[in-house]
Length: 284
Image 1 (cartoon, one colour):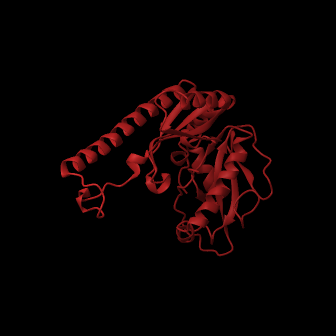
Image 2 (cartoon, rainbow, N blue to C red):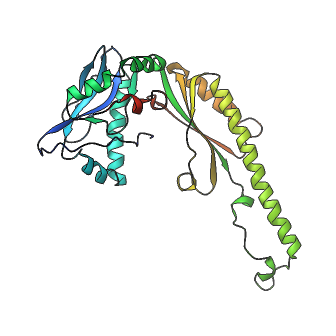
């Protein structure tokens, strides 16, 4: 889930006071209804705040636990970050199910409804444009990996095999260097093939997409040591396009050049990557 950024929140000073948490801005059609348990624990019920002809999905949350200091402490804890991000995502998903939706970043807060409405209204036309762009469309994530073969997963030793266990075949330094060069060449060839496969995936999906975004590649701490990510992209696709996407991915997986290629698809999601919610949120 990609909803991990947050906006700094100023302290309000009153322990019993609340602030306005904004999850998303929706089109003129009122989204909802929302489940009673939806939203952040400890907050009030979800409700709609008028932003001109649009609607913001908001919740009153305790100022004490959503102040800048409290959030900084809470969101450095992985489990707490996951809980907050999940609550935010669930609300955005519920809103997007009933109306075109611009998701706002995690922890977009204002001191009061009036401040929220004024800040969001300052970008009213841009919100309208973003909503028109995503209407009837959803986001799909597509990641491409090269899965390393057995010859590329073994780490190269730093000394020639002459230093191996007694009784093992003696290999010359020249042969050892030749093996190292072959192993390096194999890794480079695997990566070139993977990049070519990723471009084929991208071209095929862009033919059915209204927009695409490339995200930062994940490192081995996220992907594992046995595979390398070569593409991390999001695509804006018509709501009814899921079957076509699945067929395209299935054909690509079975085509030549994809033997060591893994394609990972996730979605459909609310269009986080195509609405610039962070830029449109305004200021407190």
